[in-house]
Length: 605
Image 1 (cartoon, rainbow, N blue to C red):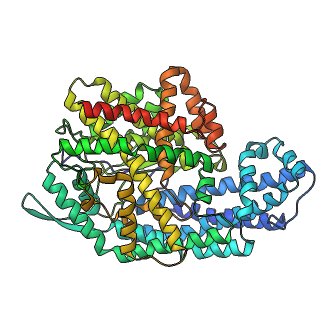
Image 2: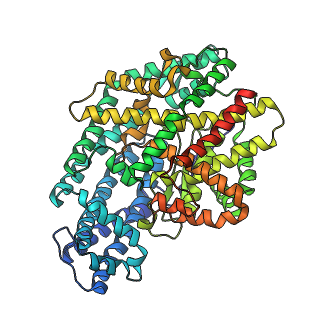
Image 3: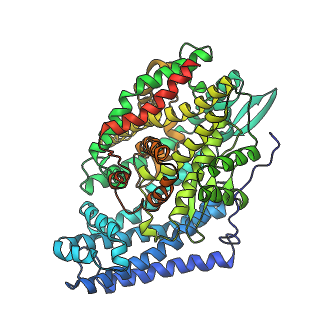
């Protein structure tokens, strides 16, 4: 299997190449669209202190002109960015692609500035309540964007002055975005000298991480873990500077915009409220003892009293089974076919048309993600396939994001904006399909143990480790408000957070102090607390899957409609369609109870 060729994604149907006339023409067209939109905003005096008609029909015409132009500009700009990112994320040594990305970023910033102007304007319009409600009742583009308009009006109260917002956006290019880009370059280019089977190799960090997680030899896992930690230490100072830059900028903007704390904006972005977050986090916190029982049980299976970090992810049970990429493909297609023709059709296209980049290699980013290419209504998936059950689950997960994009095809860009809380729905659903299928077909306890391990390992990451990341980021924001933090302080905060969540189920001397260094989530401009929405996604997905088991095929159309609508409703409103109340701890506890049942079975075996 080691010699099996793994696919690289193909984006040639979007543009023939980075130097093609088609790409250059669309790049210029994107700038022209933004210039025309700037002119439209100026002519119609669309800004916080601007003007508008008191006639709802005339007001709707002005608003529609902006919405139509913004949707078109977003569609092209997001496609261009995704296309270039397809090169940058798989080869950080590609200086041409990186240069083009830096040239694209001002376009994205200009879009943000234009949206801020409109947001201030629509917020001022909304102060005339009767006029605003009459506007939302208009047919056509405005009526189709009623949710977007209401949300924009609500969030307008957290804007600085137009001049300050413009300056903040302009400064983001050499500031917060530059720090984020630097983190991506540094982490993708780390290589480590590592000896395997008597041969010294210089391995990309992504391959070394796979060894530390899933290599069958415990000594290789231990050495790979130690080599990884040592490698991050060599680049800790520039990465600490990156994180200080990102969090310091965001903390200052939060204060200037009147946000109550660092969580305020992420909660609004997630389209939930604090009672919902408190209910979920409270249920998660109270579930730690059951996860610790699982971790202690795994430690016992592996001959430990407490589990070392390098054994958190290692498969147990019948661990000899490895999947070729072809086998993973066939299994995923078979199981998706049991759910719906639309899902298996989407997955078939992804495999056949080379939407997936699966090979780990030097210069390629670690982890996995799915990105949309709206101009062609397709997706592209990045993973680092190693034949493990975990990677099959990851592949199914990312295909869930692609399916979500498929369900939103034909929607305008402003109607597709899905909060992270709901963005994980289809991906978790897909993983659950795969896990249930594996458990249903096995008659061997060793294989059952391996399958349960895969599920519980993922669940532990999304509940326990995600909570540690939440604690880490919360403390970082609190302390960064008064001073920069050293790399050593970031490591201390991270290990304290891991101790608070994993407890003594893990060997306290083998925690991972550098989880902050390589996780790109902490470095996303304008998207703080890229952690708790994952837990929301897992637990909401499990709850939704229980509804599917009750309703059967009748569930499918409602499910697809939910995915299509995730850009046009709050999480609570959309969940209520299925009788789910996310503000009550009971829902989250019931989803966690599904995990507990599998822990009990795991320990029984």
